[in-house]
Length: 527
RNA sequence: GGCAGCAUAGCUCAGUUGGUUAGAGCGACGGACUCAUAACCCGUAGGUCGAGGGUUCAAUUCCCCCUGCUGCUACCA
Image (cartoon, rainbow, N blue to C red):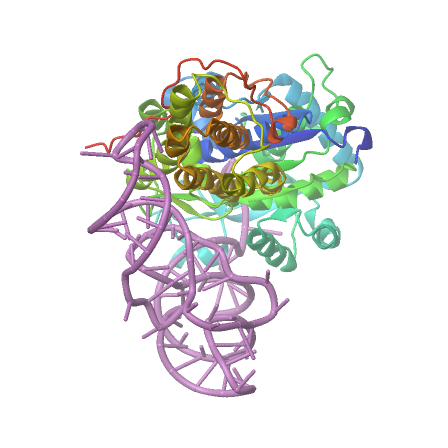
């Protein structure tokens, strides 16, 4: 571990394959990674949030051919779509890593040479039954009678025997098992870890890391007739992304500040590459292993698996255009346990954000500010607990103490990528505040001339709402920013107020309120 | 087939090492309040904790078995 930089945090999404337009399955982990990065920025830790694209391989080449455009042009087009979507979802990434970047090639070459020198890369024959329609090797046992392809039942697979470079994965079996044992939290959630353990326990065999007869990829530096297999190249894209923009593209430069990476957020479908192949590759090259691999769950739509053939894919562009970024971000992080599979249904989406963002949070702020306007002459009231009705004080105290302790608890949830539990804990404070208002009945206190009590109550409510908004800001940055604005405080997304804002006493008594209005309008059920 | 996991109120889920009336949010219904985005607050909802068996003074929580569902079981990414 690079101890000088132990507070540095690098977070990655998968590098998305540019075979098609971004879909909700790419948006989901990106939203989560963005929230996590924003959380670490609140903590004041230097944070590098990496996303990007994986652009090599046969599929890309073929797709480009079908479109009659060069593969690079195809990649460029898709990348624009990704970047556009991230902007609309308010994803504030620091680096966008493209595997077709020339600087990436330099890193891949250097890494390849390093591994090559250890003897972990060797030339051998890739043998097997090959389906020309799928363009892939098939396991003998999955073939139908007479070596017919299971997907293309009218195609007979042919025996292929071609030269490939292999990576000596088998050599790392024991070391990987040691790694999983020494660092039980390396792969999360635990169910995924168990899968990997089971997989590795079966025994690891070497895998090919080059292709022949494929031009869309980096040439193998020691043998340019081969191209580097897309996965070997793609995984290293994370490391390339660590380079500062004006650094020479060398491994040493890439590793100096942000390495090792704090967490790779990935879909469970690409778990093995990250939890098995990648660590082995890094071990071979003598590099440190990332701190954590987190495999999130997959999404369904109305309980049904999404797929192009089913025609039920969620279009993230349409969604964000219709509802805006914050409610979408909120729904996916609040309603779905990160790490488990989850479902999106528009009804549930609407009822969730209405209940939490409009009714609980938004209305709480709005009703509180309304009372400040009516009872406190539009001025944030002073906070002075001396000489106030002990009954009122006894109602306020538990809420205040919960608000003060909330930061620490929510922080633990964020660190565990437990966004759902973070939201729940914050909501509890919001519910308590709404209840506190009803219990303390400030309208009666006001009529009874108990202004000190009204002041203390409203100050405490506003301050609690502020803390809730602050802690929710990684998830709903625009709403939080607006809440801060209505409380006459600044919240800039790129340089947010630091963690001191989880403490009590930030809003300024005596400040005259600006205009205020509901921070989140209820969504109507679409007909 | 093998390995792993899950099955709790209409829905989404909590239920730390077994112990008095099994919880929350949403939805539904009833009530109260009036500061508020018809919001907020209170109350009700009678769920055999998948089926069966076992261990125990006592099991949703441990063991066995059955049923159902899900994931993994290597080179498409």
